[in-house]
Amino acid sequence: MCGGFVVGLHAAPLQITDDRGVTVLLAQSPQRIVSLLPSLTETVCELGRCERLVGVDRYSNFPQSVRHLPQTGGGIDPNIEAIVALKPDVVLMATSSRGVQRLESLGVKVLALEPRTSRDAQRVMGLLGQLLEVPDALRIWRAIDAGVSAAAQSLPASARGLRVYYEVSSGGYAAGQQSFIGEMMTRLGVQNIVEPQLGPFPRVNPEYVVRANPDLIMIGSRNVQGMEQRPGWAGLRAIRGRHICVFTPEESDVLVRPGPRMAEAARVMARCISRKGAP
Image (tube, rainbow, N blue to C red; front, side, top):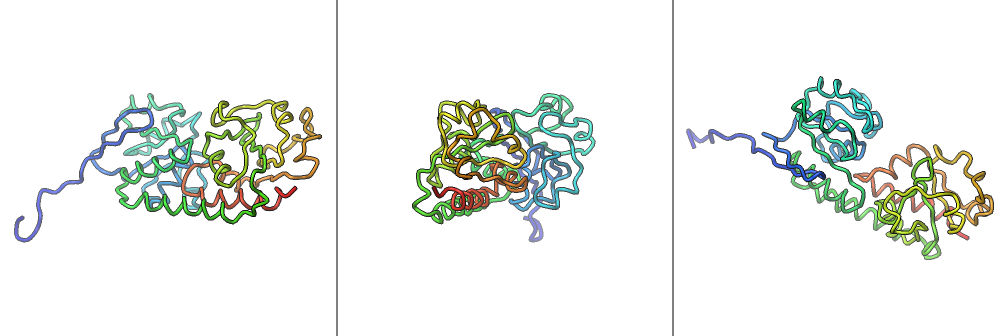
């Protein structure tokens, strides 16, 4: 103490271990952040640190304010030069993204995080809370989790046990039981036709779905074209009864991002089940 003031205080260094098992050291909480994964972008903003974002990937479109930020490519094709030019303190990106080693070789700090399950999403929110010095990050998560539970409780008993196929993207990639989407389906009381051993987001062939013959199909509007012409699909119970939820691009964005809008995703899915799931 000196004259009533504390002297010699400095921001505490941070040490965060990412999903590669790599420990990233930062002198202080980052003030300039580039995010290359929409769920990470949304989490930064939910934690109240949106103003620290200086660049995002081309798919980050929520909240509205991030649409005005410089775009730096995507996970498959990050624009390394554009990222470096933004002088970020840290780049947030998926473990599966390309360019991690290139960025690190240029002296850029990278935190690789890729939530695939609800537990992952919770953990990532906690890690970003540490990174951004937001002490109540897990309180925010608890509110999200409560929202998912409320959506589940809103469903009628008749919806329980419906057999559902959820197609995540073109090419027949489905939401498996081990994915955050599959976990949400379980919490909502419906049965995922994709067997757990196939993994979180397996590619399934049309015959697999024909054999399972789901009661309800969930699919995005980007992928629905030609669905009924797939081999054997015209006879599916869900298609014959028009038990199909076609999600708008905005709804699909909410549903496929394991982050702060998961309660909203549960409500979207619950509305689908209530409207289209009745036999």
